[in-house]
Each structure stands twice: as C-alpha cells, then as structure tokens.
Length: 349
Image (cartoon, rainbow, N blue to C red; front, side, top):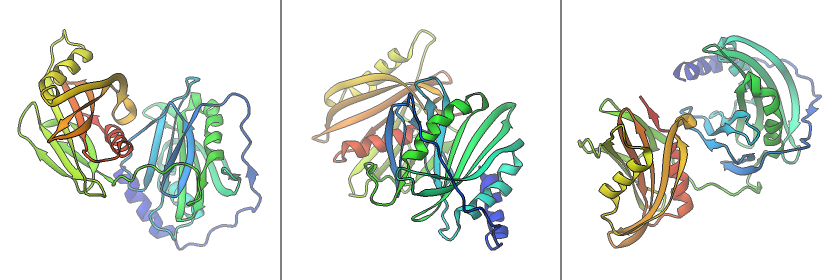
C-alpha cells in the first residue's frame, strides 16, 4: 500500500502537466441489467451514492483516498467487492488519474494484461461518462480480474474498482453493472446519508496481537492488564463520549465460542446495574471477514444513564477477545455505524 501511494505521487508529478491524448467522444451505453438481480442495499459516502448486494459487508482499506469498500459473496455464490475512491487533488481529471494508475500501479502487476478499455455512460440517470478498463493479473499464483471506472464527479476525479477471482468475474459483471447503473452524485441523491464518522487511525502493539482502527483524535489507553489490555476513548461531533474496550481471556480446548462469550459476559458485563442481553448472533468479522465471531447487544445503567452495549467476541492464538462499545447519548444509527466500521478493521497477527 505504501509503495502504491509513493508510486502514484511520483507519477502524478510526472504526468499531471502532460497534454492528454485525444479520446473518442463516442461513449458506449452500459447495458441495462435484466433477469434475476441481487437484493440490494443503499450506500452513501460524501457526494456519491449507489446500491450494492445486501449480503456484502464493509471492509477496511487504509488508502486515505478510499471512501468505502464493500465485499462478500452474492446470493448466487459469486465472490466480489467494490471500492470507491476520490482523488484528494480536485485539479486532477479522471483521464489524468487513469493514466497515473495505469503507469504507477497496474503496469507493475504480475502478468497484467488489459481486456477492455473504452468510454461508457452509466449512472442512475445515465448522466455520467467514465473510462472503463478491465484487467487481469496474478496475485500469489491466483488469477484476479478487476474493472476500473474513472469519472469526473462534483468534487474531483473518482475511481470505482471492482475485484473478483478470474473464475467469477464474468458472472459478477452483471452485479457490477447494477452498481454502476445505480450510482448518483451530488446533494440531490436519494440515498440516506450515513452518520458522519472521523477518518480512522490504527492501534498496533507488540504486546497485543490484534490491530484495530478507531476515529482519529480519540485517545488509546493501554491498561497494562492481560485481561483488559486496551481502552479507546473519544467523543462524537456533539461532544458526547464513547468508549471502546478490548478484554482478553484464556480458553481451553473444551470451550467453544458460545461458551467463551458466556464467560466474558459473566465476568465483565453482568455486574452492571439492570444488565440485560438483548440478542446474540454469529457473524464473520475483521478485515476481509476472516474471523468467526459472535455479535451481542445488551443494555444496562451506566452512571445512572441507560445505555446500549455492542460486543464482538472472537478467538485467536489460544485466547478469547471481546471488543465492546458504549456511547451514552449517541444516536443508535451513529453508534452502529462506527462500531461496524471499527470491526471491519480488526486484524490478527
């Protein structure tokens, strides 16, 4: 990732002032999607909105230009993901950005070859024109295919990137077209706004084999205890406080994740006044959703105020971990949005 950013910065300096080659004004209309379609959810980030498969989850991405990354398996068993980025220099056009990405990043991929390179019209109102490029390459012996769409938005150049294993890409292309045909820009878009969340910083420590993202500007407190190694504290834009805590405990070969969750709940949470578990469900968590986990919601009184608590339990390296969050006074939607964004960053060593 660091190499990619350095290469792009160098390429930007070399290419941004060069004259761009003429491109045909003719644009191919992205074909309408017919037949069976995925059940879709809505996403809005900044001045862009689009639909995506409801079964997909948010994924972590440390690229500072990335607005959102979503991925998973569709209802028909196809693996795929989409990420949307906006270049931080509004003077860079979509065509210039495409040349930069081609030269500084794509050309360096193993066995990379271009399958498609054309201009298309797309979007919810068919009012967007973009540069579409399909490529194939190899990553650690695995054949991957990607689709890039570069276009000029209301606040700079955007990149929409789709990724699938090569064996899934042709089938995934129908879903990718659904996403592109739902895309809209500007303040007039109909998708609901996601609660505002600060950019994420990342906590890493040699003493804790788990890294986790948290809002920039929040404080991390290393508790110095095996069973409570980390506390993260901060406030939302309205000045209302929140805490994210990591607890840890030993497990035996005879414990399953459900039993571990029961023990951690009993040790750390049930002592709160009027504690009540609301629900519990299994779910994959972490970066690329590789950790088997349990999500739990509960309520209790915290300093005389009723609060909701969200917790994710998982096992790693012979220990059990619980990542919990409370945020008295926050809107529930704001709390959930941040909690799941944080969960999507978790990586284990």
